[in-house]
Structures are given as structure tokens and as C-alpha cells.
Image (cartoon, rainbow, N blue to C red; front, side, top):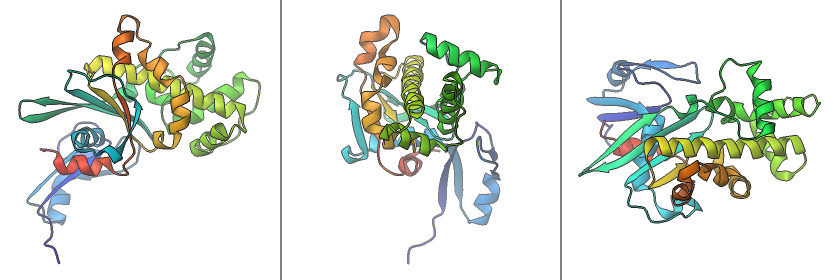
Length: 263
């Protein structure tokens, strides 16, 4: 029987804080010191969930990722991870000397802008319901529902009460043109957000898509406007096309990252 661990690191979706941690999209909070005392940890800390995913990137094996777009070999040693789920998280990682440096961020709360006349009409509809159109409002599981509902409304239909997974299945199977349009727009907006995030971080070494939604959409994502929107960044278009894009396919990258995090 193995001895009980004396150190622990937990990765959660929460804003920076000290001892007391409150999660973003789940009604749950905890105290690090109380957890350490309860489980007899001599050393215990917490990191953001995407900080953990970023720390995992250098340790992923070939079987842990799918190459979405190979890009070019880059001189940049900075990488970024973005992932839609209940929200939209992100972080970047860079090798500085002998150390890995991770910067957590909140791409889900960046502003989002329309890129076509149809998107402008959709954003105008959503603006009547929300005072701020931001990334994870639309690029997340709940965001896919909002896109589907708004598209049905614009097409003069009453939307069905569908879960995000149901919308994805209908879109991929081709049974529901509104679901397909919603998922196509979801992929396009994800591309726009990821491109902005790479530019904001200067993370030209590669983009890693994480989270529970994307791995199930691989063929659909590859044929969507994701990459076109990712690269559609004016004077930076050719440079963005050189950025490799991967999808993390291993089940728990956060555990890999938490195990390597120098908290």
C-alpha cells in the first residue's frame, strides 16, 4: 500500500485569489488551508484550470493531441491553450531559461464582434437580451444554445429546448439546418477568438484547443470556417497561417499539468 501524499495541487476554473477560491460557473467554493488540514498536506496549492492545461503542453505525447493544421516550424517558444466548455478559458506558456512560465487569462470575457451581415443581425438580436456581447456568451456550451435559439428566431421559427450536445449531434448528422448553422457559426467565432488570443499573447509557437466540446467535433471543425477566421487578421494573415493548431485529445490534461506545476 502506497503512503498517503503529502503535497497536492488542484486546478479549478476560478479567478485569482488567495486562500478562498470561488469557481466561475459552478456554485462551489473552498478554502485551501482547510483542505490541506483535512487531508494532512504539508504543502497544498491551487491553480487555474487553464494554467494546468498550459503546464501540460510540453509533456503531451503524440497520441495526446490531434494535428488540426500543421502550420510551420516556428522560432517562437510561446504556446497558448484555449477551450470552450461551460465557459471559455485560456492560458499561454513560454520557456524562459530553464523554467516554464505560464500566464492565465480570461479570453471568455473578451469582446466579440460580428464578421458578416448575418452575424451583425444576430448580434443585434442578442444585444436586446444582453448588455455585453463577449466571447463565452456564444463560444461555450451555453453559447451554442444561444446561437441556435437566435438563429431559429431570425429564421422565423420557435427554437426547441435542446442541450448543446443535442444541437451538435443534429448539426453533424445534418438533420436540422438551424443546428448546423449554429455549429458552423460556433466554429467560426471560435476561430476568431483564438486568433485574437494568439495575437494578444504573441503565442505563435502553436495553439492547442482543449475542453470537452472540441474533440467530438473534429471532422466538422476541420471543414468549417474555423481556420479561415483564425487567420483572418489583416496584415497578420500570412503569419497566422504559419501557426500550428492542435486539438488535445487526452482525457485529463489538467492532471498532467497540475502534476508539473511549480505552485
